[in-house]
Image (cartoon, rainbow, N blue to C red):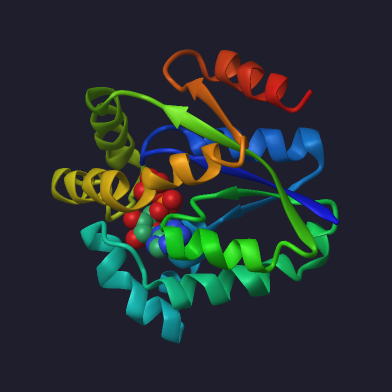
Length: 186
Ligand code: ADP
């Protein structure tokens, strides 16, 4: 059975930045559903065509599409040792689908990244100046934060009931936050 570690938190909290280095250190695959969807958009696949407008507007891509994409990704060889899920699940329906495939994969922990709203907006708009991400705009950011509060934040309680949650303060030096996360793996 392989372990899944879920990185949960609002947009701009630094999940992706930390997931890259932690995945290397712990020999886990890094699965970012956002990155995968952006790749579909740039390759103009069927999924990419559906996802493009939703991504730009900061809205979620329909559960069924994202769930299918993730299930397929988990079959790859690089996931045998487990994976960090960065940006999935984002809804209760997605979380329930993950529970169903957990015969081969066990959710071992959920790291919740905490940062205040002003900090998140500042980071995303800064990133928007260099990232070229078409959803790092003021309009899309406020939608993304609202979607997070409504659809994704309830997952914290969902996993707290199973004692899987560790909350970390995601404001500070990248390296300090990295060390906080590593401690959760001990
Ligand atoms: P951020 O966390 O900064 O919003 P992501 O790269 O994780 O960035 O996600 C970017 C966008 O991709 C989301 O706003 C959404 O449109 C889409 N997306 C990513 N993951 C999911 C998911 N699990 N379910 C639905 N949509 C998703």
